[in-house]
Length: 437
Ligand SMILES: [Zn+2]
Image (tube, rainbow, N blue to C red):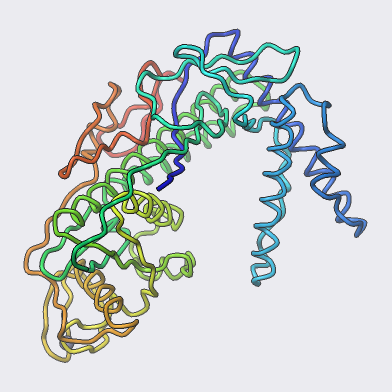
């Protein structure tokens, strides 16, 4: 079995390398902007848009980047365009073709442009140019490095690995998973249930919103291009990055806990609500009290992480429609409006933890060809509640030790350490405090 994973590492570069990296990111930004401009030019005149091959031939050797980096960026542009086109064809009129001019863009380095030298990764910028040398952390994933993307102070490594084929299960056992805001995920096999809390994540998002609003207010009083404006921009970037890292870490841990539950209970296939068909509004209606959402994006990410983590153990994640799964009474099938933390059926007086209802109903639906058969699966008496990560610890400055969850699955895939970087501290009222300004 083959698996392709993207690993994110924070890197600190010495000034010379930083300069080269900035220049490369700048060139990539220029190239992207050119593509956007050409596209806009053609669209306005209703001209046919040049083919990928034409553009590749045109831009070959015109940028101080590796020839394959140029090709990869053009491919990325085309992939983005295709995505938008499909969306528009499916009736999403708001989907916009790439339009933003980019000062910086992450250059992509294909395999031929990558070379390991001791603990350093060499990113080639093409013949006759000095490569960028990036020091990578010691514990690197084994496997073939397919490509690298150079970001601002971070690097994204795509690695393909060959994994042992999992043993085929002796007997089939299904589980149901409900993904949501209050709980990132509730998983159940009908006998037991595990709920992974989403509260911490939500409060971090709220903290970011507050922090960013505060900065925005300060920023408005500064002049564009001024040193103070730049400093505030950096602070804004820092907050966003930090929140992204904490979020990613929490989602990985949440996914690992769900996987561990599946392994411990012997689940061999997991049904989950199909988030692909879910738009933001629907999700919103479901959790009307949370106005600062974790966001549909994060739900999709959790599902993605789960999918590949489960695949390692040969457990497929099967997506089914989650319509009515949170409202239907597991006991009698009556549809109830749900309010509060306890599910209460008005028809049969069935009471259960609200969190478990969605999960057992999804399981029920999965096992009965998309139909909920009332009375066959009830919410387990005991629900284990877990947090993905102790958030206060996650927000401390010191590098977090790689933690292990039950079942021995390593949770350090979110990669990178927090070392040596100034990060905004979290104050007691839950907002991100901006210091050193
Ligand atoms: Zn009922």
